Amino acid sequence: MERSEILNVIQDILRDVLEDDEIVVSEELCAKDVHGWDSLTHVNIIEVIEKKFNVKFTIGEIVVLNNIAGLIDLIQSKMQ
Image: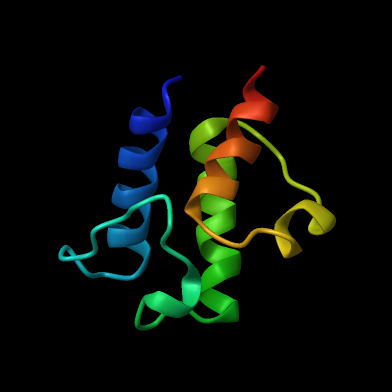
């Protein structure tokens, strides 16, 4: 799956979980940039992403993520 496709899916997930259709996701975006993206929401977002892409992340992989680009890289690595 192409990066742009993954980015679009992540944007849809964030809009749904955060209940904000105005969120625009870029590869540079990080949780602190989005109102309402706290630690509990982060867990929910990761859970939805795992289900949507049929992947599983370790805690170690999740805690080192800095932005959406890193998340896309991780998703792509798990889908290979």
